[in-house]
Length: 214
Image 1 (cartoon, one colour):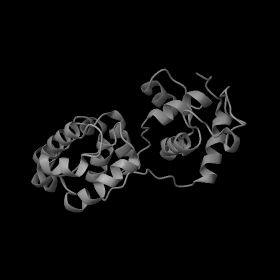
Image 2: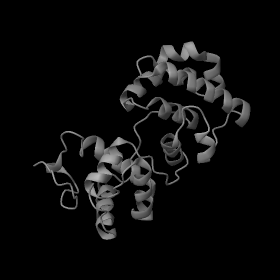
Image 3: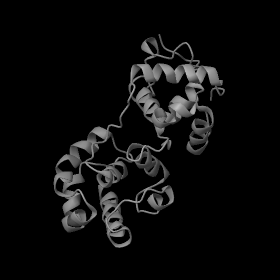
Image 4: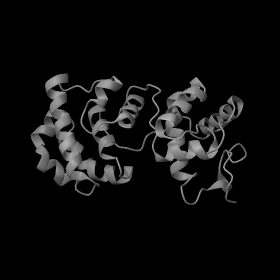
């Protein structure tokens, strides 16, 4: 684990990220906040590309909790069976949809606690939804962010909660809204797990990773 970088270095890192990509976007396709929650829940231990492939047809016919209930668990399984853990995920999506209809009038709540009370929705999923839909500076720490945070020294921590706190504590407020997207995309396309692309990295001179590749 790298040491925590200082304020000025972190500010320079995110200035570079912002200049390269001023409005980074999540890669999960959705048509409204409900389909965003479903897509993020389905993406656990799956790729965004794999989820998008499965949900394009699904969201054309089931873009509200009631329509998902009308489709039913078996109908949902037919759409998502290419995604890992599809049976458990289908159960969770149907349960979640029933709760949204019965307890929230078909609307998706926008508090973290209420989101996390839904089946299949953990803190990471709740944070993605709060950030992407309501533009709240919530930090959803996935494997990419955990790796980048610890390699670079931007937001080191022993577990995802520690990394989330390090982001909130150390990244300047004006970069908080997009911080998790910049870090995810950097980890997905540049600071890869096995073959980091250090030779073309925007922040190579500021990063503390000792095993840089050329």
